[in-house]
Length: 330
Image 1 (cartoon, rainbow, N blue to C red):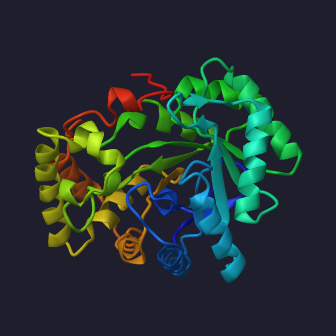
Image 2 (image 1 turned 135 degrees about the vertical axis):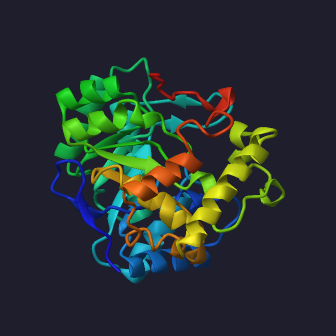
């Protein structure tokens, strides 16, 4: 299977329009093990999903280590790797966009990944006290040093993208986007298209809500991000489950997977829009694989909009305690 190839920004780097997010390998949504993670990556390679995204804080290096060992053991062809840094977790969580910090973290990431450079390196969040122009200049230095091929920004506003892009073209912006999180439609996706920047959509299957089985709070492990998320707490959660059930029935009536349809909808927003779903298992990854075969014409898009109209989700995508360093513009 081969997903449509698209250009990453205007870098000349070609990637499949469906990517893979490796956050779950770090245990963010429950325990996992390297054997299971490597089986998941085997399924990704088999499916032609060869653009993989990770970060230094996913399991505090665990995700990158899992990917690095896989690359060393399997030596798959054509893998494109993106990683991120900027977030310093802990009780006094903060954001560091300085050259010294980003370079030091990048070197550690490269060591864990077993690579000399990565195709894409993101500033995971923007520290408002650091002019974004300085961040762009830092990324330019890392490109000149041969440590990264391109750079991106995450959870930013359109004006931040424009400022950074004026200094050095931004290859990708990674923000949350899905059938239940539509904020990027209010300017960011359009700005990316105008500037030739890829828009990488994280959580495109709504943190598991658009899966074949219904999400249950009792299945979430202690520490699961979703347990304190407004959309997964009552009364919001039950309302959201009901709407997703309608969408699930609509997909199944057409013989489509729920995840595949949700991903096809995201990809239908433009060739520059690259969804980046994540999972811990090969079985869940295979639920995505009809995404490139699902054709959503005007009739299908209208029916989806009737079931899940803009703004249908109950609750904010983040609670107040989860919004540190998230740029808001609407």
